[in-house]
Length: 338
Image (cartoon, rainbow, N blue to C red; front, side):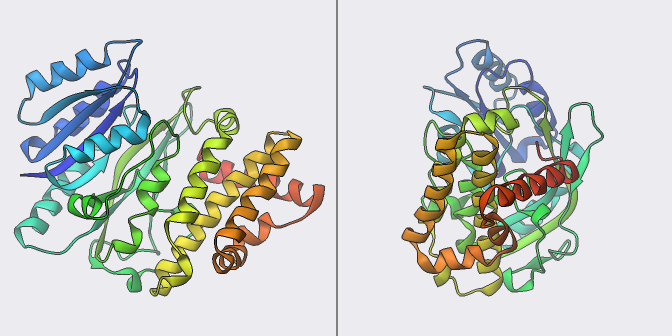
């Protein structure tokens, strides 16, 4: 059994995937690297994956599947994972090798000591083309370098959401809850980090800058123009999150607050990009997603509207829309998220 399974979803990734794989190989034979070729048709992604498997047969698995999207590639990786813990690394990103050594040392100690750990969190770094790296840390919000539960966390800022880049899950937990991401759908990382949270009991925040998240490709899913063009995908994911948990029934108050704020963030993303599209039909979709939340769960709707982001998104008319877009532009410059 491996300590850590890492799945790398690849789709026409030949140009940059090797950097992701090479940084992970420094983890040694306690790591399992699962390269999932998602039906690449324009390059030799699968051949590169097979070359790594041939060269490192005890570490790398190369799996080919018909094109099913990022979510299905993660599903395939999880189904084939033998590690105690599970991590996703996108093919155009990479990890810090020094941080990986520290993470692997910790996970070995957890397993050897038979300690309970459902989720490990590390810092991540925005590597935006042409700009200085920007580190996203959880200082002041999560207890550092120690085990803790939801009752121990502080106030998590809007810049400190737990994302796929920062999280490792216990593989067994993901399999026990039957986590399955939708096929042919973008932004499934939100489901990956949100849906397991009520089942997470024990956590650890390691203060290392582990994940390097590259932003800069024109076809990248977080490119603003791309996000506006794929707004229906964002709406689909947000509805899945709305339906996944009744937040009014969650008893742990700090978990409830965090998940409410996360859902409010998702509603905000939908609202902002529907407005920025400039299309009248998208203004109706903005109303529709808020109606969906209200119809699905009136209590949860009130909870979301009482969050800071939720209250701002409710500002009416053209003036309200201008304030919403202004706030988004300020946040984008400060946090450099796309």
